Image 1 (tube, rainbow, N blue to C red):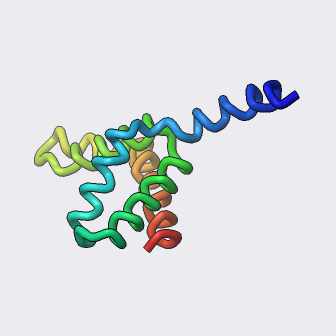
Image 2 (image 1 turned 180 degrees about the horizontal axis):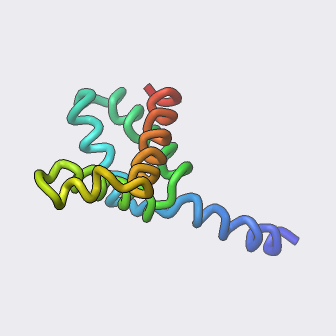
Length: 106
């Protein structure tokens, strides 16, 4: 019975936790550079990335981060990323996850 339950639960856990360790580490390092490089900041930033990972799939996170970077480009190329409604929704999902993470972790 335990094996059957484990098999039913395991796929859900892996789907909800698809952020690679490297991506989590990069997030924590960037977060700590803005909030202080100490143990307390490490705990807060690690908490934040865990909460973001619980809200978004890794592909969604990467897409939103890419859009945010591309929006900084000048001219027509950047405007494509600034004016798209679907890309704005992608960024709003990340913004919402980050806001909730900050509320719960900082």
